Length: 299
Image 1: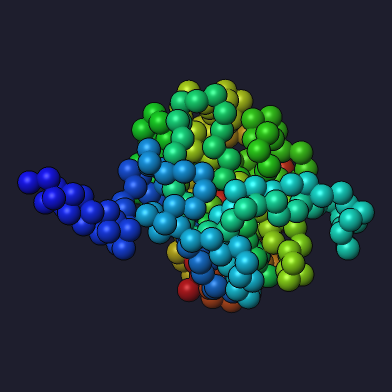
Image 2 (image 1 turned 135 degrees about the horizontal axis):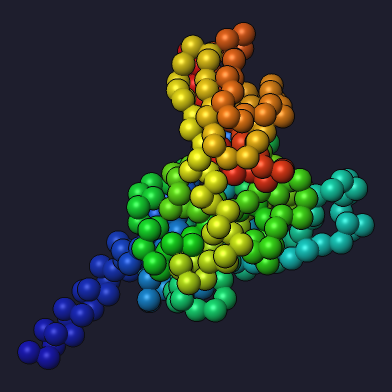
């Protein structure tokens, strides 16, 4: 009997090695730039995962391979700030970094305790030449559980999430439980890689309800006071809000701003009837903080 048991266990190991293993939790982040280029990464967690490359979960280290032009998204394990004077053309207001990672991958499964005292900081590296970027994910209801309630995506570096954004380019975090998509017009943190490509950074964290800062969580309900209708029309869109006066920006599909700083309290009409048919991005701000994004389609 013992040889049969050994052979059975060996068969199971071989099958897992060849065909992979399903993690306890896994979901996608689908990215699309304003030119229609798309890419997808996968994130998740499992008790048997590590912080490195796990072949059983379909992870592969592709750091030595150049980014695909003009758009590609990867996950990495680290980054560092780099002084402005060490990089060319670094005299603007953006923060430059360097890639201190050991790996790049398209799939990363983590082993972490969502109730622990630290945050699970995950670094998303993006080569993009056509902003803005829209990010989508599925099954937002999965993030309503206490262990994933605070899970978020932001362009503001770890440590700044729980205070306030430091410049006009920083956006408030998007909680994955609140919506199934978000838009980034600017990514303030970036580095220049060995192939002279400019790689921008987004930041992701698995967080539990217990880890949420009061300062962030109390900010979210304001988005519930905003009604946008319709989102598909021949050019006329309306915004209603019972919140304090807000401002809006509208970008076309190639990232050109066509409307800016229109107060939408208590109701405002957005008239795109003179604009070409297509996809537009609506950004709603409160004192330079982005609190809502929406796609508008004119036909």
